[in-house]
Structure formats: structure tokens, C-alpha cells
Image (cartoon, rainbow, N blue to C red):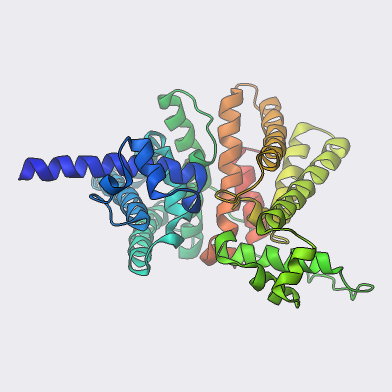
Length: 393
């Protein structure tokens, strides 16, 4: 009987690993039970012997990921006779190694939890918070001058460094990969956050006239997609937010997918136009990269188009449209990578790309994390953390 349970558990783990990779590649809504079964070489009904439904598969994946993180954290902090600083190094190295080995899990843990049943959401949230609290407690022993909220922020940033491996496919040798991630996370935990200063009040103008109906629809859709996600928003919801009947939205956009493509294109355009101006007017690579950091944070914390751009997985975009969005994004990241390579010639291009993605992921994660996005000094903190990861001084 024990051997049967063990085989059953092994099979569940195998199916969960396959599902995790599919969820990462296509998004939760882009994967069905039959897709998981086909990838595993079994039938849909055979998969139901192990999991009640797709949501149960995701729950198993995420709770397993949290459990693995708990194990690594507990093991690293168990040797209390060691100096605390050494404990931090050991913790970062262990988590980096686990992340490199199971890089498909990182994004799921952070962003697909909203698809779980409420009780599983609470469980993942409770256990994730406990891990973060344990990290912050150790960091406060190393850096007692920090306040608790700032320590938690830096620990979130370190988790984002590790989570960044799930948003790209660039790799280096495992040992070097672990060393690089550990070093980047350590930079973040050592960062000095900028002081809160008197923030300038935004200048408000009345404007001339009103936005076009198309622009109103686009703005309404952007905010709804940002808040609730693509699949939980209907055309009727968008029409109501724009002050028109749902069917009237189709006069401006033939589908929800066409709406999200228009939003994503606008986000890309904002980034590219700023990057072109920075390239034309910067005196050297360091200034250009610093200005790219500021530009990215400004776009990310402004209108919600960029946040929507990150949620296009599982959206039924035309192949040519998806390829165009991906091309522009890759070219934009390449600008950062080329500048970083020029500043740090000892860094291989693949290592520079991993570093850039770590920096960008911190910003992307923070604006989508409710407990962080409301911080008063977030823009300055993001610029500081991104510059720290990129080692801009």
C-alpha cells in the first residue's frame, strides 16, 4: 500500500511539473486539462484520477513551491551558531539554486495564485507571508537601522530577483547562474532606500475638450484589465465604465483581444519613444542607462498600459500581433543589455541579460503587489533598486 501511494505521489509530481511549464508558457487560462494530459502522454480521464480539476493542479503546484521555499528557508536559518550575515548568504544561495532548478515555478507562485479557490489563496498567502517575515527578521538583525516595512520591501525585491528567471529563457552554467542570482539578491538586500522627501503635487490642467469615444473606451479597458485581468472583464463591463452600451464598444474595437493589443502597442510605443530620445541626448552609457531606469519606472507607475502588456498570456492574439509585441520588447531589453555590457565589459552578454531582467522584474512585481504599490516613495525606491541591481553606483 505504501509503495502504491509513493507511485501515486510521484505521478502527481510529474503531472504537476508538466502543468507548471504549460501554465508558465501559456498562462492559466490558456491551458486545459486535455493539454496537460496530452503533454504527459495520457488521456484526460486518466489525469482526473490524480486531480479533480485544473484548479486543483495549480493548487498542488503552488503549495509545493511554497513548501520548497519553506524548506530552504528553514534549512538556511537552522544553524544559529553561525554569524547572521553568513546565514543570509547561505539562504540566498540555497534559494537561488532551487530557483534555477525549477525556474518554471517562480512566476506561478507570484501571479497565478488569483486563480486558486479562496481557501487555497489564503493558505498560499499565509505561508508566503511567513517566509517573508522570516527573511525580514534576519535582515533586521544584519541591518538593525532599517524599519520593518523597509526590510520587508528589500526582501520582496530579493524574491523578485529570483522570480525573474521565469520571464526569460536566457541561461548560463548552473554554478554561475546561482552565483549571479545570489550576488544580485545580496545587492538588493544591502541597498539604502532613499528618504521620503516632500513630493511635488502634480500639475492639474482642465484640458481643452474631451477625449474621443475611442480613447475613453481604451482608457476604461486599460483600468479594468489592470485591476481584474483580461478574462474577468467583459465588453459590457468596458462599455459601462466608458459610459456607453456594451455593444457600442464594437464600433471601435472588434474584440477584447483587439483592445488589449492596442493597449500593449501603446505601452511599447511609450517605452520605445523615450528610449530613442535617451539615446539621442545622453552623454555616455551610464547616463543613458540611468535615464532608461527613470523612464521605465515613470511609464510603469503612470497609466496602466504597461501592466496590461504583461498580462497578454492566454489572450487569443493574432500570431503576427503577438510576434510584433515580442519583437519590440526584445529590442527594448537589448538596449539595456548593450549599455550594461559597455559599462561592465567583464559581464558576458547572457549574464547582462539576466541582470537586466532581474532589475525590470523588481519594478514589474512591485506595481502589481498591493501592499507595495501604495508606498509613498515608490518611484524613487524603484529607481534606486533598479540602479542597485545594475550596479550603477
